[in-house]
Length: 606
Ligand code: M6R
Image (cartoon, rainbow, N blue to C red; front, top):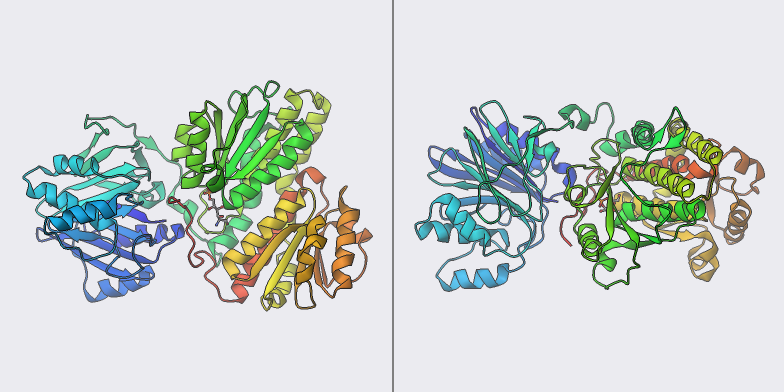
């Protein structure tokens, strides 16, 4: 969602603000803007659309400032337009905001009644107007900010410039993350570590309710009660180099290729390759546990669903998986002695965070499986199970998905062993199988050319069906989600056995049907479904392994043969062709692969 950068610099900031905004593009946005102090006054430049539109504005009218703020906006209140783009200004105040102010309508009416006029439809302008109002009442900037924050309900991360305060940027966070970056004689604010990544890797993470003032001398941080607060400065590993595309055309392509390494790093953190035993971080009483509750959204939900298959099968431990936006509002009955697991690449997804907090309030022990280890979820849970795949920039999640599955596979093995469902020898066998995954995923990515060949035809389709049984069912859901989000082709994932209960009506000779069927215990059943589809003219793309290829009936339009693997890791191995199919279909259609329309990387509003 929206991205924020603020720089109190010792040299011109325009280029650096733009550089940082480009790094935040992955969050999804529809307008962008910057503001800076020029000759003692704040000026701003804004544009609807991509950052290159803002660059065109700046080419005509550069911003000659050494202190400035920047923003990429993902519209919530008010259409994407230059008028609604941030920075928003009211009187002496110019600010950028990420989040949603829930009581904005009421505040706006109150301010209007006092004679204030609004130029945008945004909730953000209400913050600027309120702050300007408090300054008008004679308050100093920090006191005015505190008084403003006290009136806001909702979520925000803000960076603020005040006319007449040439060296100052103020900021605040509640619900949306904000970091302070420490440079050499320069200071930064950013919506995440990547925003300030090009300038510094020394970061403080503001806590809920904190507000801050930065100038050349450093940062003054206050907690929500207004008391001065110390927040530790940490050195973050996410170097600028980690988020370059390298020789790849898109981040998504790069991230698909990053997967062997992402799986390798993740698996190494959860198993000991010397003893072939699991070593899942944090104390969990697996033997005493009654149930697991997984909450997540999107691809993370699908990874969680796969986790259910793995954990229930191996550890005989009941797992409920639920879409966080449903879970959080329907007052689910929770069983005592259960473990709540939030799955989230970003660790900031609003619905997942709310579901997690719901579980916490009911006394459950909580775990977060996250990529962003400094995220809000990671900081609020009892135990963090990090995935180690590096920053994921493409909006379509790929390497985080496979890394999440690596974690849940290791967890399933650990739980099975602790619950006495497998002996030490079986644990070692399964760990050895898991350790093979990075190599086999790398082999599977080599199917790229074969998959590219199919994409041309699939790109013409109106609907695509993905079918799978057992652990291939979640992968079918993921294949459909990937395809629709980046290529805008309607796609559905189904449990193959459900076919005849409805979806078979969609089958005709224009419908590509992707059947995911490695040679496992479900194979025969999946092949029966394949026959049913082919009998109705369906164009089958059969994704299998060498044994499956040997045993498959003739008639598939295309067979894609991934490397042979143990069923335990087949979802990891078959994920690459599924992701590559979506990728090449989107490329074929000329779609904006890394920033698909209407989508955001980190969905911090509900
Ligand atoms: O950061 P999270 O894992 O919590 O994000 C959840 C979803 O928003 C995310 O997986 C989304 O569905 C992706 N665009 C899928 O590719």
